[in-house]
Length: 617
Image (tube, rainbow, N blue to C red; front, side, top):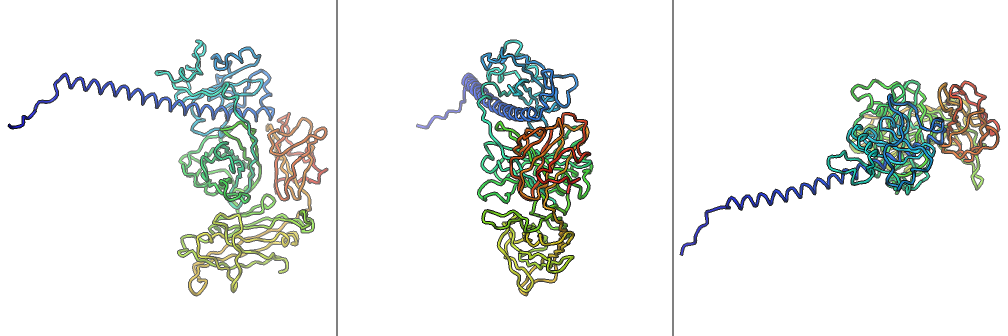
């Protein structure tokens, strides 16, 4: 019997049933996915609110320590620049997440919008990631204790957030997760109250700064063991006579640097949209890093930074003059943990080859045709002895990174010739030691290289494009004041017969020797209208000095140095300052109209052997 064929399809009723079932399933899945995405976004907003909370709290601690917070006697912090038409106001929402514990505590609570917080100094630029800083938020704080109570955050408009916050007048628990994620309502993140009281406080290590022939180095030792859990960042400010720029340096992952660039216009900073890769800044190891720890030093190429800023459409040329002395300050803080901010200070030249070795004895330079180094030294017999009685002193290391142009090198095999002479007798010329670079990083000695027929031959590896010259400190210390040394280094390609006549590259280094009188130096930086006067000490020998300051002037509590008051207006630096180092201390002025830089007798450290030195070395 032939098999019967079924040619009929679904009936209309069956088809409608299937469609209905699919529609129901799609609705269920759609709602589930939408809820999942909304919960995920809410978690991101909560984390952003927590970051703002911690950043604002850390900043309020700085304002309180410096005296700026308590300068407002009307029970509300006004800050640096009050926003037109807005003042900090008392909270309109009931604080329902703490069971009313703060309702009758006798303290004053206020709230401010994002714009007010940004302009008043409660949350200035650089204290939070730029993408979060520019969004909408509300910060609640207690004036008497200078503590943040809560933070509300959203990526929608500030008007929408303000409207949500006003719901607190209606006895609505705006801090509850359920209320903040309601469908049809603005999605709002929150952090504060009881949860915030469980945050731990940590003590940060102060950053150290150095300038090395065209590079600014900022070492954040907190990255060594706490890169991910503390999440520290540095706000590096570079101040010249006519230009000020600010860099926010952070390490979101191991050996990875992230940079936000800001340029000052008038009294405010504006973010500069430089290329996202920020190739002018890299994260490298510091000389003290133990190798297996994360890289902890931000290296900013000054010339590349300037090119990156000026390459942005609409940016005028930077106002730094070539070889201009600039002031450097780095503030270290965190968005993940509560902490007291720490500071580092230094001075250096803008995009210049000259470097004052009283700040650092290590010079690293990309390839150039000539460089000048000013070395400040003391006599060898004055150097401090170590525990075994041996005289100590810093040798001067000159690390030349990428000295020979890569475009002219095909086999990476090079040799160098070295010629050095002095303005005095040949007997004054230091005995220079030559080393291969340390894994291409500079700033450290690799394997020593001996001369063969007047040439120093390097191994056939890419790492050997880094050359380190070491000038013994003892030899430099024997030089007379005003002696000038010349070092002429020539790099050659090598073939089977030896150095090739061409191509070759030559670098000329001039070393000017200045003799110290065994004293430390200090100078005062100040101006009328400034809240602070800064005293910078250039330490010639190991020291623990005293500083006497004018009446009504006292050290800023946020200094990285341990400072003890010994008598009226006299303070002792308890920390031992290393030989050949520099440190700055901010002094808060009761009368901002004073200018202590005009009076070299305003601050006195003669009791500790520190002499006044007018201007920067």
